[in-house]
Amino acid sequence: MTAVKVTIWNEYLHEIRNPKVAEVYPDGIHQAIASGIRSEEFEIRTATLGEAEHGLSEQVLKETDVLIWWGHMAHDQVDDTVVNRVYRRVLEGMGLIVLHSGHCSKIFNKLMGTPTCQLKWREADEKERLWVVDHAHPIVSGIGEYIELPMEEMYGEHFNVPAPDELIFISWFEGGEVFRSGLTYRRGQGKIFYFRPGHETYPTYRNPEILKVISNAVRWAKPARTAAPVYGNTSPLETIKEKK
Image (cartoon, rainbow, N blue to C red; front, side, top):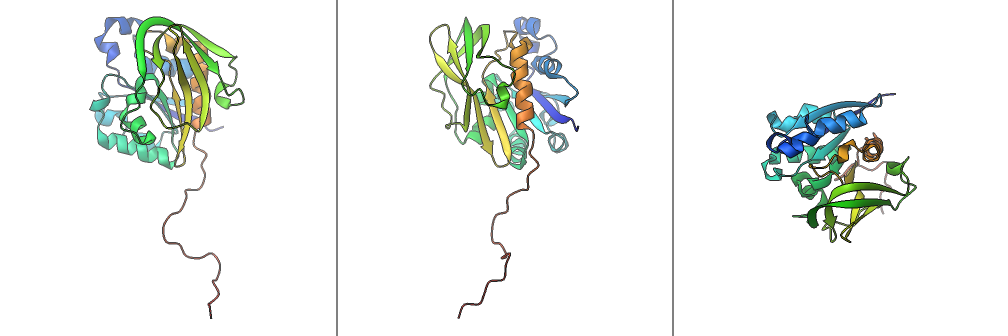
């Protein structure tokens, strides 16, 4: 079995600037996710904002089957050249998993076709219950009726995104709001999964069920290796009879 090549991208700014975040993720969110989903099925590399080309060179993306994206405080610092590079790779078939505040990333907005993917939010150490609403979907394989997180940041509707191809999770928060927390999209030959949990001050990426969802999503989003569609003026496959 050929391993799925996974690149985990993280700004890696909160962890080096905020001691509270460093306590939770001393090696960075990207390394926590890498450790949490590591298996013989996946060949994992990481990349961060501060690296040359943000760690996402043409060669790295060419060698990536699924890209996992976590960003928050530096969306505007991501170079448009890199964004366009990732965008092309998704259309070519690379899977993309966008986590938590990546909803405001340049790449997610570009793929959604919207200038902003805004929502309500609040930090109040609230309980979150992520209800599975599509029990037949492979992304929730091995997950029960819901995942419960004792403390998370609240995201609330309205979530300003296009209607998803599939709705996998709906979250309920202790303060009363609900949110579409697991959405899938297809763009070109690529598959996209947006997954809401993961605020940087909580150990969400150490939760076995959250990590299982991310692992399942990697398997789901990996390229199908289908033939690329052909566009433009095309020669006929059959001989066209001359019209009299």
